[in-house]
Image (tube, rainbow over all chains, first blue to last red; front, top):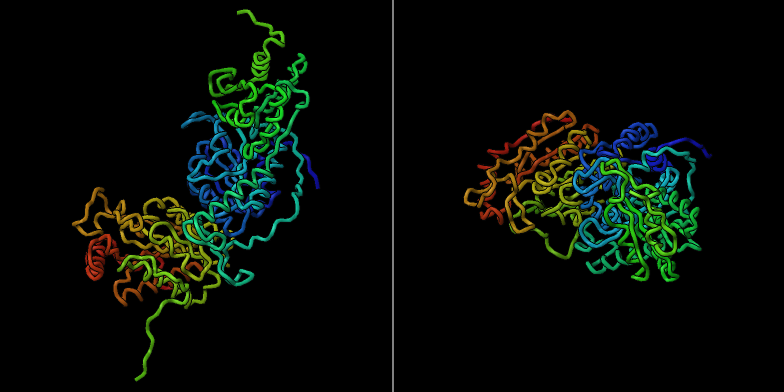
Length: 375
Length: 247
């Protein structure tokens, strides 16, 4: 049954988790994810789910570690300030092949940074932020509806790959209010039973002990006998995820001579800038990665080979630009709009469409007549 | 003459081609034995999930015929709490940590699991040493390791039992040793009471077991046992501290 409501982004996180049958939430309030925390403290117990107010992000992610080992779908929500704290266990979750959904609400950094919106965690989201080499699928919603939908997808992908999945959003998206259609999404064929969970031997179908270790490779397990055997298995999984899970959305990309690349709230800004540019006759398009990792770089490479220019827009110093550079392999000119192009110097400033349009004109200098403002 | 076999390994130790991964004189295997014998006697092997921490105890869950987990260093009590929440009374959660795991990096998860009153059983195997990393001292172990050892931290040991005793959610606390057959039986009784408290859903419980680490202490195994009885137990007194006297 479909129900239409008006909701904010942080509510969509909760509704999406409930639609995906999430059993347990663990978290520790840190601005700006505190609103989600308050909301879920009411909604999860009301719906018969566990809500654990953890003493820190470190405990929260380890409570998630335990819940998923017991077979329950579980999520952790952290703000950028708690992002570093969870990375040790993120790495352990990858080693132990355990599915957990981690929602990251990006705020300004580094250090205490600011309590307001930003997109500064792109690199640790898309690279291995904890110890060792690994990758984690990262989904980046740019609307309230998409937040709800991607939460469901995140739980599905986590179980499918037995790997953590990140939903990387930002403070503007979670505080925005938009129409939301509540509908459980069907995501492919049903996943196999979790026969690897620990629950006591007598509850296992074959009566044989199960053993979950985040020391795979260090000690032999049922799946991997040696260190290289384990690394090979992990690497194969990463390669298969990279091949099959890249997602993106494109806007007017076919005839675009200049391609905007942005995710999250910046992508919304770019949609406005795109309309303004088209009205001026600039052939602009937008590629919005839905998965930050795997990065959908192929589409950019094709555009680069056709002579398109690129403009990355992100509310951080540098991150997304690096992936665009890797994708186009030096075949195209890249310009960027970043946090330094905000409209004001305080933490409340933001990137505005006018600034994006200005950079587009600069990039196309010579082809488009630029109207210079007088001082 | 009737010969009676009075010794052997617990049934729940799995047969392994290699020897136990402990140093000569180490008492971890005896500490685990109190738990395994209790689980066997109470008939709980089908329900038990055995969680091991980091350090010297890391290999233990691999060697048992129980559902088990190897956890990130210090985090086992958070993980045990969560397992209990999902499975409820259907599962018996044993968290076996040593002091470098539970009383150093793991103090926050441990204290907050106790504050929440999660009904799990923590066995705190305290030998005041970091064995697996090459026998360094514990961060708060100065007064409970022999005086001739180097001691850079002017610290007193964490009396975890006394620390947790005030918490409302804690149902049972006891401290024992396995230095003699009598001490072993006392400690096993503590472990049994703790597990029974968990079955009754009575809240968090912890049994600390003082164990010898002769390699770190630079003592013979026999001198180590003497050290535990005469010195260590002076700082960390033995007995039941909360919830004793049956279920």
